[in-house]
Image (tube, rainbow, N blue to C red; front, side, top):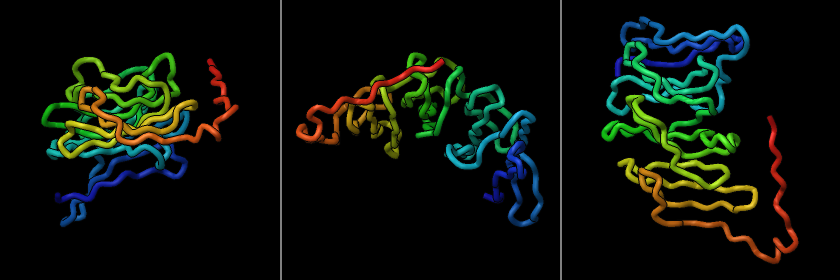
Length: 200
């Protein structure tokens, strides 16, 4: 509560730093600093890089220092505690941080057969154990958490499946379908979905 915290980038986006400035004294300190010589550290837009833990016991920081973007847990002083997510796949935005039950919920390209899909996942905040992919249908998934982190609204669609929103339990069990886009069959008559292609 005594600090103003922001992310600073250099002009060519090869360096980023998390800076804390004390509100009363104006004294600044660097919590995290990352630099890349072979490309951008991260484009400032897009997925949020920083999430404070609700308890105030540090924060989660998103970095691709290992070749893939992952979430890392730091304490309030900027000391690395652990890497929370792992794997050779895309890791995206945080959906929810449930400190009470010890879960991080997030979006990731976790299906090895279809890495371009985006799925709803969870992993233990302490980094112990394997991540769990909570959605299975092909396509793009997004999620929003209830205040108690016990249920989620998961919206998903695919090239051949119109958008649908489901109420999902914290373990991924679908509880109900709340909304589904209706497509007039007269409009779809003779329509074929685009054919997916795969690349190396």
